[in-house]
Image 1 (cartoon, rainbow, N blue to C red):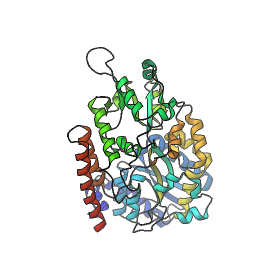
Image 2: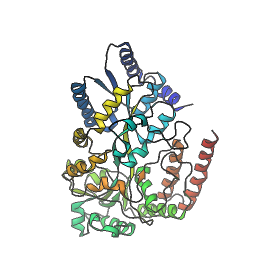
Image 3: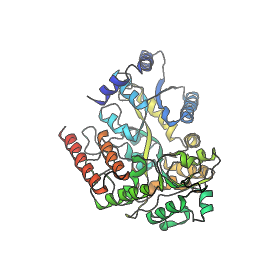
Image 4: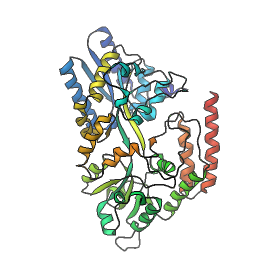
Length: 436
């Protein structure tokens, strides 16, 4: 059963009204009832401020060009794309993210935009390379290899961060000031020193490090150890789990968990009870300011592999392969994501890194008001070891890896046994995918 078939079966009733509305809009467009009009399906998961920004830009665009952009949102946006496709009612422009974009492109839902980048004022060279990579079909893909199937808008990633008062009270040098001395040994030492019983009641009530207990949290550590989990970030064909560096990574996580130096839920950090966080996004400083907490940014600690890069998810907007208004949609996307005069509004709305290289200086200028060292968020795109959050063809791959890594972290299975078993099971999935 295909992704579209599964989504239609699971979500068809839930989105019946939205599908009918989209079909009606498409019918109106085709009939000419709404001349010079396009539909942009925005991803509400990016936040209401993002939706409001796109809506405001649509009004501005209409005033300047006379082209009407109808902005629509839907909950469960990723599943909704499959429902629209199954019903033959894809909107003209569709928000996607790097995690799912390649899968939808493989199903033929999006146009190759290379022709537009080649002939227009917007060039691929104007974009951060990692953002282009996120929406470029691999050369060995069975469908349009090398195609660029979306216009990148912004990047999302995590770095390290720290609670400034907790560090000051502990008399520890800030990670942002340590340079190459900010490594796993220092991280281990800091996490131990910051895990304490603050009120002397015999129970730990301050912890060293918050790290999400998911691939988003521990996945980059494999890179830092010198062992990215997969052979490549986009549509990987092999995993490397039973290696010395991978075992060292999982043993490090298990050791810190056993000592209770890690916490896996964010509330401890957001309530000022954790010294370090390994989930510092570009909007974290603002969120913590709302809680009257003073925080700052640092790169990840250098791992045994000598690198401390970040993993990125990239947002973008694709053009439907069924649209009859491709040129109008391209004009809209160029205005929305490529016009430097609109970049400041996007940064203020999303608190994310713009995909346009020209927007990085503006991001750092604006972000300096949020936290002194927030510039490391954008700078991490160029750090050794940085890459894309893996874009896998089958969800079982990451699910299998996560299952065994978590068992090892929790001390249920030795790291070597967990990773060896995970390797065997993931190899079997890759062989199945290759055969099909």
